[in-house]
Length: 306
Length: 250
Ligand SMILES: Cc1cc2nc3c(=O)[nH]c(=O)nc-3n(C[C@H](O)[C@H](O)[C@H](O)COP(=O)(O)OP(=O)(O)OC[C@H]3O[C@@H](n4cnc5c(N)ncnc54)[C@H](O)[C@@H]3O)c2cc1C
Ligand SMILES: Cc1cc2nc3c(=O)[nH]c(=O)nc-3n(C[C@H](O)[C@H](O)[C@H](O)COP(=O)(O)O)c2cc1C
Ligand code: FES
Image (tube, rainbow over all chains, first blue to last red; front, side):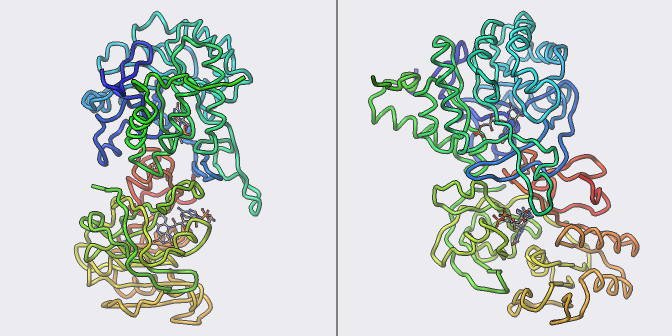
């Protein structure tokens, strides 16, 4: 096994670096810039049962060391996704995680049923943390009871690992994480974007068409690290995938030290398309320099003195 | 296919008020670039302010160099305009679709910094006629190095060229003889250009602007509403058939 290889539960990754949902499509565009098979894995843009056009423009606004987005889960729907994107994903040569979201439980159930027989899918990421949709997003992800019963409903429908992506907007993320695990989640992904908003004071209007948006980028890294650390402390046996504000290798390593078994790189890719590869290289160098036998040994290796 | 490279700034000059023109050594980007395409650039310093790259239209792609005209409107453009010769930038491109090949003559209508992609078009298609409007003389880019088969200038205050806006120049030009139009500029101008072209029954292609994050089509952040639903300005555009745009709707 290579030094960089890690596992997230039963999912084996050739290295700990995945790309985050919504920041990479399915990889078609960035696949023109580098070899996708070098990645640990791709988490696809969240797919829903029906096609979604997405939210009104403007959908983006830059903030200090970060950005707001309100894409609104624009996607072609599961039917087209399976027909058009699965053949592409079948050949990417890295792990494939399909992110799903729905308005009601039945949507999630149908999505899992459709994805279950598809061989190239290594795991399903349940997105109950999107701040940019009215139903099913934060409304689900901030309620421990809903998260537990949703995961419990989906659990019997597939043998594929179920990852649950959590919101930092929940009052107690460990409570939500534990509920997901009680429902049968194999891993927890943290964090999705933080709910935010910006205002054009001259015109007295919100900067984003949908008013609220999700904050991502370097600005949220400290929040993300705190959430990963909190989850890992509360649930030391549950694999965690760290997401939030990774813009260089050191940020990914910080996530792993805090307890993440793997990481996802999101909006940092917009600035540096090759960032995932730089992070992979940086993790290898870190292992070498600090005498870690393998990347998996970085997980939770944070030293807390006193 | 786009590439992401570091390029050296080989030339820089002030061409109008708050507006610089730079040349960047980037042969891999210049190779296949076509008029209407753009690049996403940022400085090479590992800082996150600004965090995102900025999109700029390609003004020229000859001799392995990418030329850009940058007008300072905020922090990101100010940083780029402050680059000196010999400095380096990260440059991702060429991106977007670009203008279609005109089958014969074509009129280029530029409003303000919309001149940037249209100068490239006028070099690539020498029979193109250029109409260019700015608020006043100080904003008019120095075009003394360019050659045009036909050039008309307008300013809102009459300090240079005709005292009117560029849409009026276009209406007059179209009344003389109809030709297809390629336009770039602020949205209200483009909407007026689209109307004028519709009335004159000529094809009209507009290059749109939207805030961008990825610039390659992966994030869906740069959506524009068209008659066929939301399209990505960076990947499906930035050049669109004007008839397809749902003007003023989000
Ligand atoms: C395809 C494309 C091609 C472009 N080509 C050129 C060019 O050749 N020359 C040039 O000078 N500019 C061009 N622009 C506009 C340029 O990208 C913006 O002016 C720049 O991103 C502003 O960054 P800033 O940090 O200086 O401004 P900010 O501080 O981010 O904003 C200052 C002001 O500029 C506006 N703004 C910011 N980004 C954009 C944007 N992408 N489009 C429109 N308005 C924006 C903001 O709303 C604000 O009012 C182009 C934009 C696009 C989408
Ligand atoms: C433009 C954009 C679109 C996103 N779309 C999704 C999505 O569809 N599903 C999802 O679970 N997360 C989505 N996210 C959240 C990211 O996957 C990630 O959790 C978040 O951006 C934090 O990571 P970062 O700071 O590295 O960007 C999106 C983020 C951005 C910036
Ligand atoms: S800027 Fe990301 S899709 Fe256009």
